[in-house]
Amino acid sequence: MRRIGLTGGIGSGKSTVAGMLVQRGAALIDTDAIARSLTLPGGRAMAPIAAQFGPDVVQADGALNRDRMRQIVFQDASAKRRLEGILHPLIGLACDHQAAQAEGHDVVVFDVPLLVESGRWRARVDRVLVVDATEATQSGRVMVRSGWSAEAVQAVIVQQASREARRAAADAVIFNEGLSLAQLDAEVDALWQQWVGAYAP
Image 1: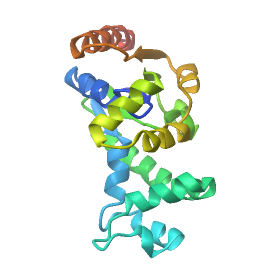
Image 2: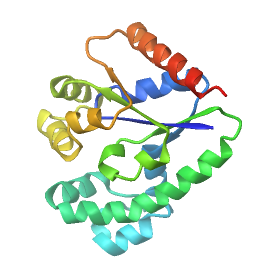
Image 3: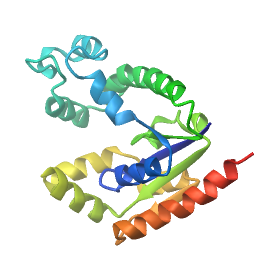
Image 4: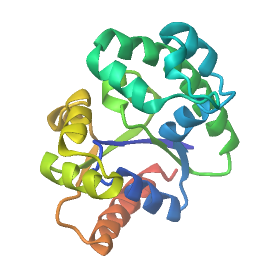
């Protein structure tokens, strides 16, 4: 089994690329989806989060109040580190479990938005694929997709690794700027052929 780490800034098109890799036979492990499951009502992260940050980050149904949590971590870098200290070990355990369940696949893709920021993922994967786009394109896509203001998108972008840092960590970069879906799919296909062929014994 070969492991590919997939990352990119918000609005880069990373999730679209992930879907294209799955269409080619990869198993996908989505760390954002894992994080969401950990913060649903009854999720394993909710008790330690409530103990660390107080009851106002917990909704009436027991799920994480994401808007309130986002406000806290954007205003306080230490709060961000404390939240990550709770979530990252639990996400790591879930990733290991899901990878063990993907034994029938030759390729496993770990979709990790904060792959570069975490500092731990490089050693856990064989290759890193970065999906890149300009900040203006990122912002426009998220505003259309999620209805966020430009200021809200920019607040997320500045919390993430820079484009330069992500590109420096990459084994390959797909520059998803001005591409049709067909053109993006062709880029993914070319990389798949190169990397999966390289994995063959």
